[in-house]
Image (cartoon, rainbow, N blue to C red; front, side, top):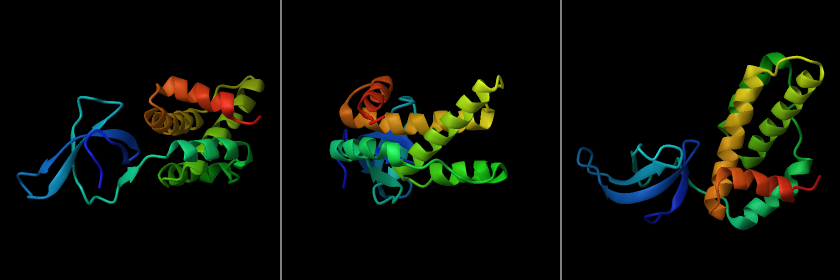
Length: 158
């Protein structure tokens, strides 16, 4: 069970638990979650909802950063790439987010080096995966998302 002011992951959003109360319509005990990206939104979620997940620990972040250079890029046919991005993004696995980030970054860099425009699809998934990963790291380390990105980039083994 979580406490008031805890940060959790709910449906690909980092949220803070603002309160716990009974839902007046269903009678269920619920958390009132506020996404970090939209403080005006209040989500009323039953406390036993399996989609509420704990954030990584500082140690798990360090392990993930150490693992990053060895996370493989996605190796599927271009026609299947968006389906793979979707599957990996929604998997809940942080290594899968890194696979998306690495793959989309490399694909866009290759396009730029060939004087082509970056792919809208690759750029969209790159930003989604980056935002989710760095938002979670930022919440755990109590820093901004930009500082979380800088932290990761400065600690990853090249």
